[in-house]
Length: 320
Ligand code: BDR
Ligand code: CA
Image 1: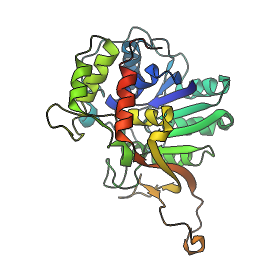
Image 2 (image 1 turned 180 degrees about the vertical axis):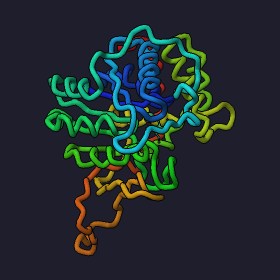
Image 3 (image 1 turned 30 degrees about the vertical axis):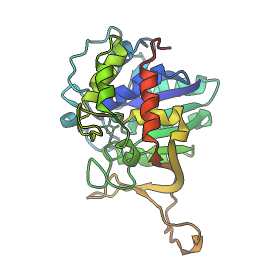
Image 4 (image 1 turned 60 degrees about the horizontal axis):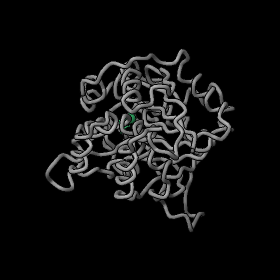
């Protein structure tokens, strides 16, 4: 299996991502690190521990990370994810605590200890990842790839042009893009498209297995997703799609493109500027003075393939 670490702000759809990662036989979830985003970092730790317990994976280490972005004050998205940051589902409190070490230390240790290079999957503001890269730059030698949920080629959600995870900590996102490791951007352009039909959500919710049932409850709490069959509420996979992209990379269509984060104050702050200009006449493209990172940007997604993959995975009886 591929060794992976998820850095998250659980978060309804981060929880969907964790459930999937725990149950997919091709992934080995080595650790989970938490950062402020959808809710405050202590809420994120609490939610993450609960989800892993419900998923039948109570032993995966969970560490607490940054309380706020590198430069800006913390802000929450409670209007999207409920007061507890995870849909206010009334889940039980976790029975165990978090790791004794902080997120950056856990990331550093797990990455360097892994016998094969690790794939990092950030599904949250990129503060922990930026701090890791600045504190321990040597980790890049054992990182296979960073597949992050964030950014948008077209429309934003936090602002007209900026996606929440990048907008929340744009400086951190800029540090990620400069990491010098292969990066895949699973942005809003694909993120919003992968929606589980209402009939499947209903079946998951009726399951007797706690992890499967939780997946159904979480999907039912993503009402912003369009409803393809009209009857029951359909649910978007959200962040879980980025984990699908690690387990099954053939399900997305990417292009290697220059990407830059707008750090300017004002209406473009946090925008990911993706250069899609045709490259055959290289001399006709004006690059300006800046160096831009080349990123595999997801432009297409096979929706049916990822919905099927997600359902098959979370409905597995025996989690590994
Ligand atoms: C991202 O923002 C968060 O609210 C979601 O969990 C996702 O990671 C989408 O913009
Ligand atoms: Ca998230």
